[in-house]
Image 1 (spheres, rainbow, N blue to C red):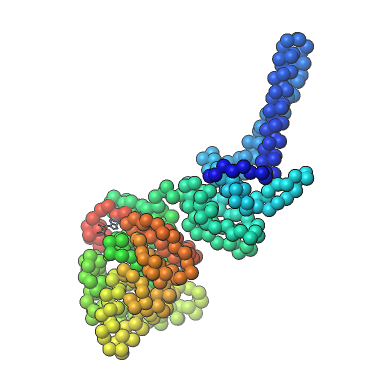
Image 2: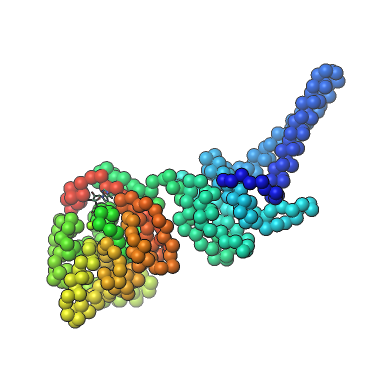
Amino acid sequence: MSIRNRTISTSRIQNGIFVYTALTFLTIFTVIISIIDNLLNIGVTKYSNPFLITIIFSIITVQILIWMIRNKGNRGIRYAFTHYSTVLNLRKTFLDSTYYNIRFHLNKKIAQLPKIKIDFEKGLSIGKLSIENIHLEKDLSSSNISIALNRYVVERSYLSRDEKYYIFEIYDSNINRQLTFESLDEFQEYSLKIEEQHLFIDKFTKIPMHSSLFVGQTGSGKTYALYSLILQMLLQKELYNLYFADPKSSSLSVIGEKITAHNSASNFNEIVNLLEDFNDLMNQYKFELKEKLGTKLEATYADFANPAHVLIFDEFASFHTELQTKDKKKRDEVMSLISQVVLQGRQLGFFIWFVMQKSDSNLIPTYIRENLPVKFVIGNAETQTNKTAFGTGVDTKEKNFQLGEGLFVCPLIANQPKLCHFSYLDFNILEAVDSLN
Ligand SMILES: Nc1ncnc2c1ncn2[C@@H]1O[C@H](COP(=O)(O)OP(=O)(O)O)[C@@H](O)[C@H]1O
Ligand SMILES: [Mg+2]
């Protein structure tokens, strides 16, 4: 941070100066009295020392207490120091960039800095930073904040509902959010701790079931991302029924054949049949659920202990391209099978996961893409891919993503793109699937 000659001070700086001056003065005074008393043998230190020392220590104790309360010392000393240094850096930055209001205090001009609240979580790895919106011409930008935050980086920012605070969700850039598993046992142990009806992605991310989109260039780790989710679902077989469509007959279809041969399809006609069966089953459930809904209006499949039916559709673009060569009637039929699941499946427990390399509208129709609540863009995607997946108005930062790392959106959990990093699976997937079957 630049060291600039600041001509303006804050009330906190003023109070600090006052307290330290008082302390220094009192200490010097005590020492002088002691020396004089020692030389002249008057005997006043007997009375003055306890008094003065009590005052000095009281001031120090009160200062420490204030510091502890301000920096939430009850949450640990490391927490308090991180809190302290973060607030200090932010306040310095605000002073340097003149983000403050001018107030008069005892006839002296002082800078009134915006209020700062920080709430760190998960062992200081993430946090929520609230900065008072002091209605200046200047806007608080994420980049300004990031510079002041040392190792923390702004993940997303927004204005609070009452518009009184800018909220910044920050994370520790040194922390690895990815989970690594060296065996299926380790994986199993971790997934059993996750709350029901949720699938974990990384240390900080778990998502409920939705129809979803997975986009990423070849080799970005999409299929492995799916493996980590499929294994979780296999570990809770009673909650999930899986279906596989893989028009390129790649590794996913091998897994699909092992898990559920009669619900796996890899050529065009098989996939269309699978989609038809999937729809028929959904309509059957619709009928059943309608009767049950008489008792509970907002209920979903999970409330009636029905499993989720998940159709995992790898390389969807390849299927869609082949579909374009068919006549219009066929095209409409197939797209209607797909869109019905996407539009009506949530309550009934029917979901499709589309996996593809790009999400352009010629590869997946916009009306389907826009109705997918959960979207992942894995790896370093082109700007166009981020735009089609997340919308044009959304700012997605350039970052050098690792294998399995990327951005996602999900209702309630991530309304704007958030970072995620799928698990590193350092064991044989085929063997794992075999042993779970
Ligand atoms: N999470 C992961 N754990 C272990 N290896 C991975 C992971 N993600 C990717 N890989 C490695 O990278 C290769 C490409 O990943 P893959 O999931 O097949 O990419 P995509 O499906 O996007 O083309 C895999 O064969 C695997 O060796
Ligand atoms: Mg793949």
